[in-house]
Length: 338
Ligand SMILES: Cc1cc2nc3c(=O)[nH]c(=O)nc-3n(C[C@H](O)[C@H](O)[C@H](O)COP(=O)(O)OP(=O)(O)OC[C@H]3O[C@@H](n4cnc5c(N)ncnc54)[C@H](O)[C@@H]3O)c2cc1C
Image 1 (cartoon, rainbow, N blue to C red):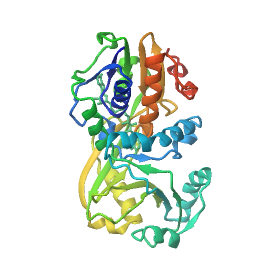
Image 2: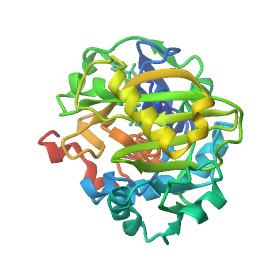
Image 3: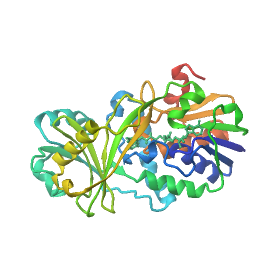
Image 4: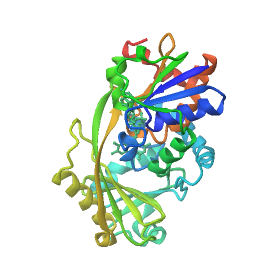
């Protein structure tokens, strides 16, 4: 079996690595195989299977949960990629913030915690934090380290090439996994959704858990790495430009410092902009597009979380023509394609 994967982002590389592991002859095509193109470079790496997305497209919940189950073994197969299962604290600052966050917390069936219970778990939280929850199954990973590990596994199998037409690619099966670039290659309705993300650096240990919170109506998450980096995300804008804006950075910093005042001493090390590959229902497109062409794209806010299940389902499809029926809600057919 000769398989080609168009797109060397986290989804394309995860699929290619799984195909290789199962004995296929795989080639990945990407115009920047060692570069930082792609949403994965910006993504925080929250593995949050019960986030806002499940309200937009309820069938997604099962897929997110199934992929979350696969993450421990997937991470172990990649080496040290910053996979951390300390869990997430959902937090809210004002009464209005509690009301807003409560919808997600209730859906997850989590017990409410008071501000002081939260500060026992995370002493750097502001004394103004009023309520929250502990979500033990919401974890994190460093997407940059994941991509580095996958690139290492696929060394020598990546061709430096921008594909402008799928028919140019010679293989038994072509998998299109080009993130936002998938629209131009397939005609599928995948749009870029701009997100700005900050990386702060300071002494390790300020935070142990991921913090996912609301502060005066601003939603923010803080993802602490073991080396002292704290990723602060993210804006969500229906725009295609790549410009970091004063307003975007202000909103993120304001919310972050409202929740964890000690972050004020951290270095503002990076401001990055990425584009989530969104679809009309904001769920991914997974399945056969036409003879010998399979698509795996449109992962929007959850592409890091969904990498292991996408790799497994698409590798099954490519190698056997069949896969788990969990994929049925995500086929390109729902957009009138295939
Ligand atoms: C601000 C932000 C925060 C996020 N945070 C999280 C998070 O915490 N958790 C989570 O699960 N997800 C998160 N995501 C979402 C996640 O990053 C994406 O869903 C995921 O990266 C999609 O993976 P992908 O491989 O499909 O696309 P990408 O990562 O965008 O990679 C696409 C690749 O395709 C290549 N390509 C494009 N066109 C072509 C072509 N014509 N020919 C060849 N190659 C091509 C590009 O060069 C690139 O390498 C976030 C995204 C953003 C923007």
